[in-house]
Figure 1 (cartoon, rainbow, N blue to C red):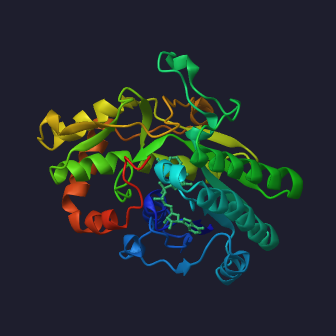
Figure 2 (tube, rainbow, N blue to C red; figure 1 turned 90 degrees about the vertical axis):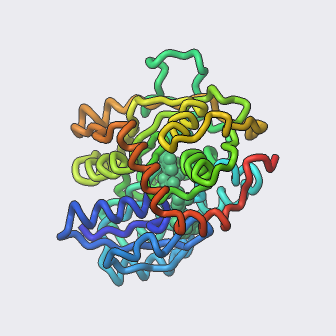
Length: 331
Ligand code: NAD
């Protein structure tokens, strides 16, 4: 394959580029990123892949990259991804996630790429009641009921991707994934925020809805899922990617504090973010039965590795923390 990875300087894109270069050394990988506050060129410094500094909404620049590197596969991670920032500035989410994706699709359509794979989220389906059982999980047929500007922008991007497949025959696949954790995640997101605050002995801000829970998947398992879909997925199909492992916000904070040997009274309660979803859980049985995918990273081991990675990369996250655009009490 000759793959263009958009959003390659962000959390999952960085992990994906590292993963692909290691697992598929005969493939060509090209990284593309607009380097917003969330992207870091240095994430890819140890890897020898071409880097294109461009916006996915710049059809001309993307088209030039597709031609220059003779790309056959595009994996689109590029997005505004922080729910809290979307509360303060929804327009930038619609701009990048919906219109940016549409312009990227135009470039791919003109270039005739063999595959456009779009990275999406469990959050497009809305939320589940806290007391619903595990059989309440979202399937690929669940209706889209986004409740926040970020989720609405991701839902919009999924619709545009499907529309380009149905209307223009662009060969697309989509994955909707649960919450990821692992190295290189920007320290504005809940898990690295807790880890980096605990490392600095700063209070961990916990929303009043501390019993809200998320399904957690190690970023490497997300990469293996995309690998399976790129190699064996059905054109036009959507696959949910989840682990089934749920943690409440309080449990997550306590996990981090225990791993770092910090006291529980480092937790402080802050007001909820407006529209904060209660619970997401995905049914990923299609991906498991059809493509034989399984998550392999044990949560306790993966979390311990992640905490260790942040403890060892203080300079990396300290720099990024200064670029954060939101504090968790801005509303
Ligand atoms: P991130 O914010 O860490 O990275 C996003 C990257 O996209 C950044 O490097 C940024 O510079 C780049 N970018 C933003 N706007 C761009 C534009 N207009 N053109 C080119 N590049 C642009 O996000 P992430 O957590 O790595 O998420 C990647 C994708 O995965 C997103 O689409 C997100 O919705 C999706 N996703 C994330 C999670 C999660 O838990 N992090 C879960 C499911 C799905």
